[in-house]
Length: 185
Ligand SMILES: Cc1cc2nc3c(=O)[nH]c(=O)nc-3n(C[C@H](O)[C@H](O)[C@H](O)COP(=O)(O)O)c2cc1C
Image (cartoon, rainbow, N blue to C red; front, side, top):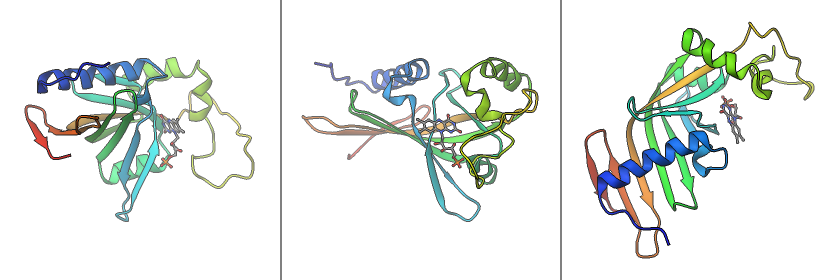
């Protein structure tokens, strides 16, 4: 049986450890959170993404996407977004409020693209057809590797809402950079 962590600093440390693991392990349940954004019309939108990198020191989470996607347009309008993670193994839900910056160019993006362009995912960022545009066929042509739409999203954590489901009772906390508040679940 898992040991139940009691101290806020231990729970906080374990949350970041699990996020780090999820960015490395494709089988970790936190690998694929849901990213929720708000459009310019005020409507909510949400979709699954892959957690690619985690930087504990900077308190940031990294996601890759296409510059032409709806989420990028929505984030340009409203940088505040929410990432929702659920793990059955941990019985933990984590809702991360974050402020997201969008990078489409620059040395960091090009270094990541150099890696991604050699992978099977490269075609996702080379298609001449923007994601979400009406499509006549499921066959997608790939373009020139220098004309990519690869984009790095950096989510700077604002705060977290952690919920643990447990037999002996549920626990919930609001976790800020230097704060911890236990909440009624
Ligand atoms: C398991 C899974 C992982 C996904 N990972 C990503 C991702 O890392 N980045 C991304 O842009 N889209 C990813 N997608 C696709 C998105 O969920 C979404 O369909 C697409 O990005 C278009 O979203 P948008 O129109 O809201 O921008 C993933 C979908 C699934 C099912």
